[in-house]
Structures are given as structure tokens and as C-alpha cells.
Image (tube, rainbow, N blue to C red):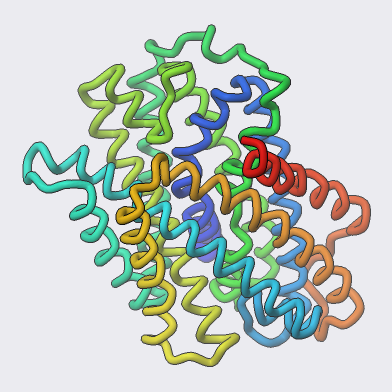
Length: 384
């Protein structure tokens, strides 16, 4: 039972900690570290509550679905297609970001030895990760648990090796005017709704562990994001880049470069695998596509868009992709999940292993927080 809990937590942590962690320090610098710290904690807790509500929806339902199937059951055909947009847009945005950034990390680590460039290494990463998505749940469980354990170890090693280079002055900023700037990236970094149905599958014989798995799986990323952001901003300050740890490596060099690139590779790989699997299962369970067709749609469309981005030469593409994706997807997702939770309490077909209370009040607060990111993105798009 304990092993199943660890596996479920690893799946959720692996789903959450991906490209977003590399964009948070860059966004936080714009708001000041203290303002960014508040945003990380508040939004992290809000997303955790949202995941708990979704977990209750899953537990109230006998059939196995991905998010689109639950939306159809409780919100009808309109809800289904809104969730299709949310899940596909969000998942593809994440997978594109992972392909972009993984190439940079592999290039930093391997090109001095083997040669090559970022594009070649992005394709190599894509091939390896796509294989695991095709392989299915058993391969995912093993790879997630292994890689999440290494992520925790490497974060600790990074803190130990870089601690003496942290400047307290870099961790004291609070830019009131830019307070909401990190919201989109932070929401992207915490988005994990697609992992909840996956956790339910892993815990199908131990559903009482669902609530504990979601809470632990949410708290670990909050702690890691806080420590990682303090490390990066503390070392690089105003010079923080969207590559985050690569900027720290340039400042300190040596073993930090090795630890940093391995860390970046692992967090991107774990999330690509988890999100790719969730998207594949949506196509399989809710659209009745064959396994191979579903996996192909899940993985190869992001690759095509990656090549389009290269062709268009979009500047700072990684940061733009995660900021826009987080600002649009998570607020819409939150509204749909709150509505689903209300309907599931009335029309669910089984008694859940846990229940969330005060849905109305907490749901409004969550939706309001997330909509701030949504309208901030619109404001930036219209007025810069």
C-alpha cells in the first residue's frame, strides 16, 4: 500500500515539475522575490484544492475517463468540448515547451563531448520520451518514481553547492506594479489536473489513499519551487534567464553545470512522459481511438509545432509558450472543475472515499485568482 502511495505521489510530482520550474525564477525577478514567493505559495495551495475537488469527482464516478469524459458526464457535450480545448491546448503547450528546453540542456551537457546542436538533441529527447508514452502505465510508474527521487537529490545537491553564492539582496525585492506578472508561469508550473485520473488508476485498489496522494504530491512541488527559485534568483539576481539553472551554472561553473543540466533534463522528461500519457488516454478512453493512434496524436503534433516555431524564429519561445499556456488553460480548467464538482455531488454514481466542503466559497476564490492571470495575459497582449 505504501509503495502504491509513493508511485501515485511520484506520478503527480513528475506531472507537475517540468518546464515551469525553469520559467518561475525568470518571472519572479520581474515581480521581486518576496512577491513571487507569495504567489508560489498561494497559487500552489489554490491548485492543490482544485486537484482535491477533481479527485472527488473522479471518486464519485464508476467509469474510467480522462478529464474530457468527466466533463461530458457532468456538464454535457458543451462541457466536453470546452475541456477538450483546455486539455489539448494545455498539454500541447507543455509538450512543446519541454521539447524546446530539453534540447538546450542536452546540448549544454553533451555537445562539448559529442558535438551536435539543440535541435538534434531535442529530437533525440523526443524519440526516447515518446517511446515511454507508447509503452504505457507500467513503464511510466517505474520511470516516474526513479526520476522524481533523483530530482529531489539533485535539488539538495544544487542548494549545497550553490548556497555560498546566494546574495540576500537578490531575495528582498517586492515590485507592487509587477505583482501579477509571474501568475501565468506559476499556474503553468503547478497545473496537474491531467494527473488526477491517472492517480486514480494507480490507486484503483487503494482509493482511500487518493486524498493523501494529492496533498503530498502538491506540497512537494511548492517546497521545491520555493527552494529552487530562491537558489536561482539569489545567485543570478537581475541577470536571471528563462534557462534558470544554466544561468546559475555560468555564474558558478564546475559541478553546478553537471547537476543543473541533469536536473533540467529530469524535470522535463518526467513531465513529458506523464502529460503525454494523460493525453494519449484522453484520446483512447474518451474518443475510442486505438492505442497507437492516440499516442501518435499525443506526441507528434507538438513536434510539428516545435518545427514551426523554429521556422518562424520566435524569440524567447520557451517563456512565451508556458506563460500563455498557464494564463489561459488553468483558469478555464478551474471553472469547469468547480462546475463538475457541484454536479458530481448531486449526480455521482458512487460514494467517494473523501469529500470536500465549502465548494462555493473556495471555488469562487480559486477562480478569481486564476482569472487574474487570464486577464493579465490579455492586457499584456493588447497593450504590452
